[in-house]
Length: 59
Image (cartoon, rainbow, N blue to C red; front, side, top):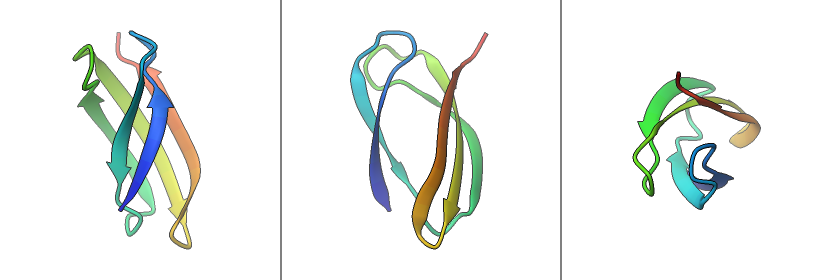
């Protein structure tokens, strides 16, 4: 597991999530721990390193 920091697209606060480095393709929705709005995460992992980390607002 690795802690990944990012800026929430709704409240602009710096927050973090834990990324499981054993899963190569990840696509899921999780609420911001600060403002509780839903954020879609698209994450790619290769050789135990995060190679792509995208966050999207949910309409």
